[in-house]
Image 1 (spheres, rainbow, N blue to C red):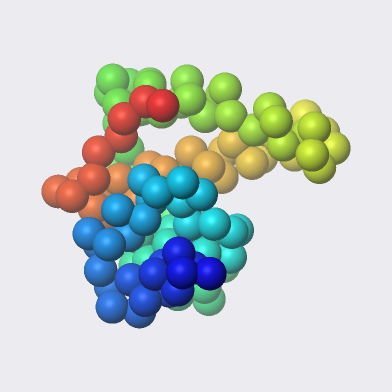
Image 2: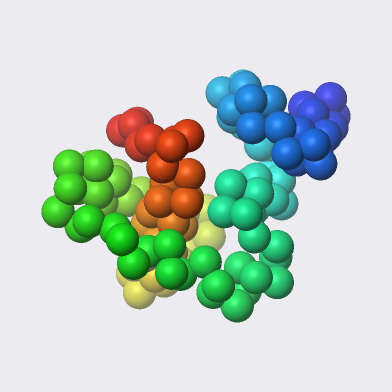
Length: 121
């Protein structure tokens, strides 16, 4: 599709502004594959580096008691509920997914603190 091509092109060019515009479009990044590619781009990682957890040092400076961290945690706790409807995940898996989501969100925001901020919703 046209939007898929736009995502791939923006990733290839490293175009932050285009990715931001695409994120706000209906359907966003369209697929799990493209969302994963966008998150890896935001973290500045290759797929291999992400699998090796080389991004985890970004979590070292997270201030768990900050207002932003508290809002993110509340949103993460409200997330992943609809996944069990579609995939039948159990509570343990849901909790693991929440931890993973929280870690990635924090790492992205720490790595790009001058460009990104968290907004509830």
